Structure formats: C-alpha cells, structure tokens
Image 1: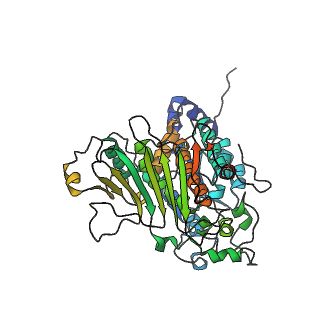
Image 2: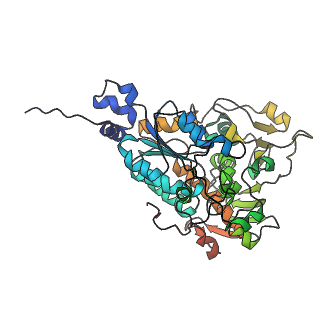
Length: 470
C-alpha cells in the first residue's frame, strides 16, 4: 500500500543540515517554494542598541520572534539609545517576548537560528540553551562573562559542527582586518615583537562607565519601571535591587553583568593580531589599575583605567611577542605618525623590525573597503608591494554566518575562535583584579600555575534555577 508522507518545515531543515545545510533542501526533492524555505527563521534575544543593528543586518531572512527586557520608549531612556519597542514595532510579524526561555520553548519548531545580544552575563545561558535545541547561534562578543562559560560554549560548538556559530566581532569580516592579517604575514613590517592595543575614547565611554561612588547606591530603593523586566535581566546573576545606573548599557561596568572595557572592545582590537600571529595562550599576564580602584570597589565594578601586559612564547618561526592593553589610556605615539595628529580612539599599534602598522576601531570597518589601516613610515607604505589576497572576503559578518548555516559549515569567527579571544580578555580582567602580581599561565593545564585565587575567578555562583546548560 502506498503512503504519502508530509515533511514539516522543521524536518526539511533538519534533513538539510544533515546533508550540509539549508541549501541542500533541493537534494531532498523539495523544489516548490524552495527559495522561501531557504531563508532561515531567526529569533533575536536582545534587540535594543546593538541588537537592533544585528537585526537590521539579517533582515533579509525571516524574523520570527524578538525578545527584550527593557521596553521603555525613547522619551523614557536617557541619552541616544535605540529602544527595543521601536525595533519590535518595525517587525510586526515577529512574535514579542520578555523571557527568552519562553520564546525558545513556545517557538522551538519555528526557529532555525538565534541571535544573542543580551548583557554579557546572560550570553552563555541563552546561547547554550539554543545550541542544545539544535539551533544555529550568533552570539555577541565577548562570548561569555566567565572562563567556565566560554569553555562550555567552545565544547558545545566542537560537538555540533553542523550548527553554525558566530562571534559578534564584526570587524573580523572587514577588509581592514583581513589586510592586517595578510600584510603582517607577508612581512610588511618585518618580524613583530611588540603590540599595543588600546581604547582611549573616554568621552564615548561615559555612556556606560559609572563613577566609583555609584557603589554606594547598590542598596538604594528605586521603583522598577513597569517596562523593565528586572528579574529576566538578572538571569543567572545574584539578586540585587534595580537601579537606573545599570540600564541601559551601563551594566558593562559591573562585575555581575559585564566584562568591562577589555571585554567589550578588547575582542575587536585583539582579533587582527591574534589571527595574524596565531597567538595562543600567554605565558604570563600582569596588570595594573588606577589608584582609586580599591579592593572594595573591585567587588562590584571594573577599573576605569587599566593596563594589561601579556607575554606570548615563541611559536614556530615567530619570536616571543608582548601585547599591552591600554584601557581608557593612550599608548606612546609610534615613530612616523603624523605630528600633532591624535591616535585613533581605539585600535592597535604593531611594531616590527621594518616599521609599524597602525589600525583604528575596526568594529566600524566594512567588507571591501580599506578604511583605517596605515603602514609607517610613509616610505614603507609606498614601497611595500601588497600581496595577493589570501583570506576569503565574506559579504558581511552576519551573512557569513547565515551562509554557513545553510551549508552546515562554520564561519571564520566561530565560537572556537571567539572563545579564545574572549578568554584572553577574561584572563586580563583576572590580572587587573590581582594588579601588581605576575600571573603565570600553564597552557597545557589551561590554568594559572601560581595563583589559586586567580583560578577561582574562572567561575562564579549562579542564581538558583539558572544552572549552566552543559
């Protein structure tokens, strides 16, 4: 007896992934309406501010659900922020949620891929939950707030190679970053042995850098606005009272929620040199912070000004490399830089035996456009013969992820790569907390060899009901 079997869209996509991604659907005999089926159904967790940018970049796909914890209007928000309520209104076909767990549970069969753009402390919780449900996941940088979480994400991605993962280090896809990689590898500035990476734009940072005196306000009784879903924002973090000094964006400077400026911008600026020089784990990390950063403040907040010195061992033909992070401070101006011209507001200075390579805030760089990469001195820039392009150029950081999802492959900034970049930043934060101490790192054991208090910071307690889904 002949039977007719009807395949659900979910079964089609699952079968396609098994064969190599959404693009394999035609090989399953699905031809009618294939072009619409090949669009991924994407759910977004966090759609305000940069979450809105992620959504805009992926708007060519099917936006089926959106989630946020702050639904205040533009008039209710201080400063220049993109309200989630406006973003949701622009996508009336997407179902709206306050709790991403409910969203994933109710819409499981309608979701192929998930974008996570929450506060840092929720990244791993949401991203791993989506991974375990079989979704492709794009997670903002830094991937997570602790090393335990980062390693859990890398492990999950390793064991699900056909689920495309992408880390939101958006400059990674840019022409600038790919030129940096190619030029350094081609020996444009000779042998590299020293690098400064920095964020100097304090004026911009005031959007989410709190004065240390705000620590005195953590127990203040402030009514929670009806539009703010405070318990959902807290997620796995310890319970604390709502305060407008946390939202929007200023959660970045609080230990329970963010990873400081090193976690925020460090991934962007470390990316080109880690990629070009294949920098693994450092052999040592040492840091300092501003004089007002006391032990008591350190329990609550990240340092306003900090420096982190990483020492990387020689590898292959590459000699040892020293990398110094300048958090809200300006490194020395390199020789050959135009006199009187300020350095970029953030970026890197790579010192080689033949010259210097300088780059700016590459998170604003775009594919196909050289915007902010300079070789010094000018004579070197004129004489250097540009090598042929050897690194693939994606159309965008976001579409590289979606294309990989449809093929059942991994994009270039997958969690395997993003986890390492994130770990470097988190190791730096641990060093800042131990300022004045040279922390020795054992790359084989993946832990510090001379500080148990530093190793203890690899993890932290989670609120009841928010166990990490590993």
